Image (cartoon, rainbow, N blue to C red; front, side, top):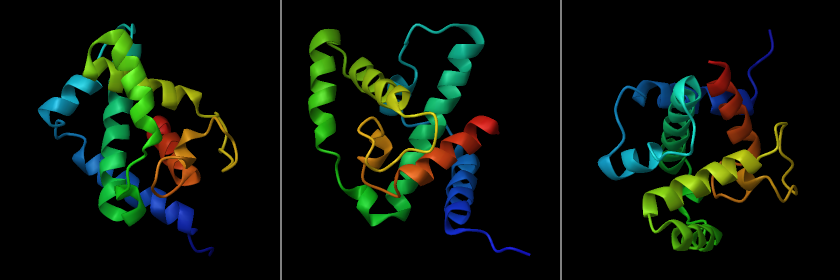
Length: 140
């Protein structure tokens, strides 16, 4: 019998913690960002909301578990500020930037040197862990 890999262990642990918290609603300021309208309707809007909430919780868990995840991603400030100038809403600026980053991710396992793989630029467990966690969340 093969032992589980470190990746599988990390993904399973983070996924389990996130799933255990999904029934709890996000704090009020975060709820506004998660609910920001990006032009989706019906089932797509609900799926998007569920994935946003899971992604938010995954980041919270990363910060709790991994010291590097507590470091700021300073390059994000410019992206959010630029979007705020055009939207005049911090909620929309943050939600739009997060959506842009998520949608820019490669569909396959991201390479650390792939410039579109923002999951490698955000301090924390790395793009591969985030990729497999996202896949597990979507499949579930």
